[in-house]
Length: 357
Ligand SMILES: *Cc1c(COP(=O)(O)O)cnc(C)c1O
Image (tube, rainbow, N blue to C red):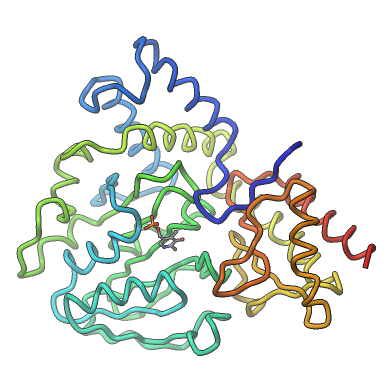
């Protein structure tokens, strides 16, 4: 049966990525070797890594003065690497969910952290607005898409006072155009919109580095990885190869504007059904709804049907729609690689279930 993969991460990859990656596992670019066994220093893989970084720059229109690096350790290591490299005295953070609060916890190890606003008391069902970022902050950190709660900031926040911006874009990078020039660091674990798990990308403004007093361990210093073009140590070779395939596919789709348009359409038809269908309701403030992770629950009078709908959807080929334990209900992740036809299949499952009850 045709499976529709709505998993939150690792998550759906394009057929193009999977087919080319599978072929390279057997024979990597005519070398007679598998991508799984080649040297990262061989010219074929160095070319892959360079092309992937160049395509990221092109796709996101990364201005001069920035470098793209591939790192290990997941987005979670960036929670510590960012303050290690940027925090002198004080940093400001916006608390919009589990990942944001994990980032806050790490930053506190390095200096004072001003949590400018939090929606924790409302179980992160909205994005706080009208907060103020002090100009004495070394940077302002936010999470553009809250993967677990299904809220998103599809805009570049403007602190209005020149404070550096740092963003965790793990679950919405490449889903829309971004003005990179407004940021000092953007980072993203690859396993939501780019590649299999194992690689993290960071886009770093070089001028933001070198301003902290503390000693930085070599592996945790962005400058190491910039200088060595992501080859200081052995990089995750296979995930980087797969990332390159996805980047080629994004170009074929027409770039980030075309991709954003598709994402908006996919999210709109699903939210429309959630709002229309008497069995379901969305869990977050309408204006903050994520186009990547759509969270919904059964309406109160139908609460006891949750397990039934889960089983019904699963029998219809829906995979990974169970909500995160901190929200409950359901979460359909509609990353770039998710075809509209799969979203339509989920909608039709919701309609059929409604008719039967
Ligand atoms: C998945 C995710 C993370 C965690 O990524 P790891 O690679 O597992 O460390 C962090 N932030 C956001 C927004 C995420 O979606």
